[in-house]
Image (tube, rainbow, N blue to C red; front, side):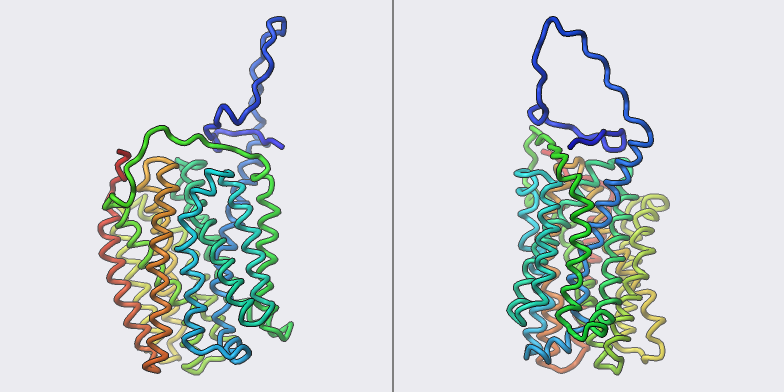
Length: 427
């Protein structure tokens, strides 16, 4: 099945990917194909944008749906605090381990088909978390984390390729959908559990949105678009200082998010909140991210010379908000959710924006995305792991605050370097 191409979706197509008509001297001269109708172009664009948004929507539920039920899962399965810490860290670790495979998979079968495969694996992993007790929980988490790692790497490359003139806008929309999915999982997992009476169903429920996204994305995968590899051999990114600066920022700021996703509800429950209320706090915090997830890249592109000022402001808000939720009286809880949510949304969207803006072309954007999210998520996975191990040893949540502040300082240093207006050298 083929789809008409529009100016907004102009893509270089390899000659070998298209069938060549038989030459016939007697055949009449070919006529110029008519341009696709505006309505058809609009539908094609809308289908692509909707598919990308639905994929992004599914890249966080596997991460945020567990923490509101973590205490109940521990009681039901007998997991220790250290094992629970490993469980919250495992998906982030898988993001880092499997992210480098994404560019290779895209070159082999195409980015669209690779994304479809990732969605199918994500649905299977989410469903597996709801069967076979602790073994199924760990196995499903690994599979879901691997799928998210692949999909998360490929989407920024598609943004650079299909919307080169609207990179900040599309990055904001993509991040907006991603935060919405995180908020939905944080807020709805406990009600699904309460309605079903089963934590397994509460976790396995999130296979359904992944299946829906795969069905919407199926036409893109069937189109079988191929993009030729640039003949210019770029310098290896691991030798580029700017690429490492982007990677460092992406990983260290991501650790903030995964500490919040994995441990904030547990911290609040220990401080006296019910699991439902703690999950609701995480959901509201994630919903607040929607504004800066979209607004921070736009603000940086319109009113700032580069991205450094916005990065610094977002990191400061995130750190202040988290410290308030750990130490301030519970009566002020909702006050501190605002800067935490605004900061988390802005720091993550700026990380994705740096990947797109610092790469001069779509090929390097995909490679930088793989490096930044591969090595970056390996860095990020250490944050929630240290929080779990530290609390297991010290029985004090001040360790979470210390980890948050240290990682935030590192992210600030990397962000000030990566936020300058420049691009990675091709040679």
